[in-house]
Image 1 (cartoon, helix red, strand yellow):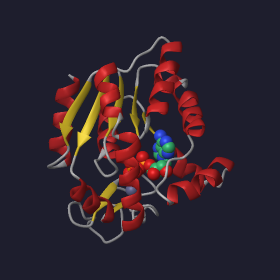
Image 2 (tube, rainbow, N blue to C red):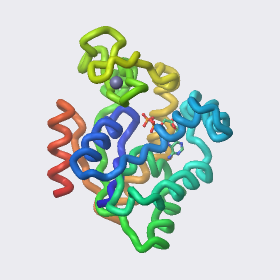
Image 3 (tube, rainbow, N blue to C red):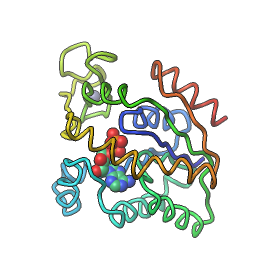
Image 4 (cartoon, rainbow, N blue to C red):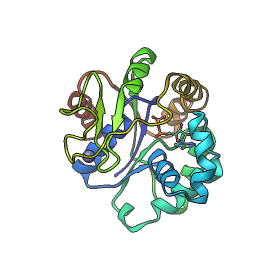
Length: 213
Ligand code: ADP
Ligand code: ZN
């Protein structure tokens, strides 16, 4: 099964993608995670991506398209994958369609996680992640048992450098200008399903699963 998760920053794409990965045993492909890893590893790609990401802008299309092309050709993607954070504009979406067509594959479901802007800002400003295991926490809605420590593995929690008020606003603007138009694109091309991304993580997950099965 090949899925795309759409939605603004903070909609919970990463959280839902991780749960879908477990349930369906297919890889989660997050361009954001790949880019952040490259920044951490100090690679050439990371150096190119860092300033753009810290400013809340999109990394150039040719870079992310190259990453995706390489990733979906890997063996573990044979049974499917979950795209989280890609595509982010119409050019990326068109390139993805072309690439899949060349491989004789297609996207089965596009899930749009809908949540309003005020809620998104609140979620992003309070969130932290465990760099060791990827678990996510939130000051208000999902606080760790011990401050700044991961419940699952004891790792020291981190805040993303782009989760500050100014950059969040920029990311939301980029979302509405470049990414939101994908809803129309996919409602014409493939099956776009809208899921209300409010409530608990589990509630949202069961709504997502209903759309798939
Ligand atoms: P969020 O959805 O919470 O903003 P992501 O982890 O998906 O977070 O992305 C973080 C940053 O990585 C983006 O603001 C952007 O700079 C870069 N990025 C991720 N995916 C893409 C993409 N498909 N195209 C361009 N830039 C991307
Ligand atoms: Zn952890």
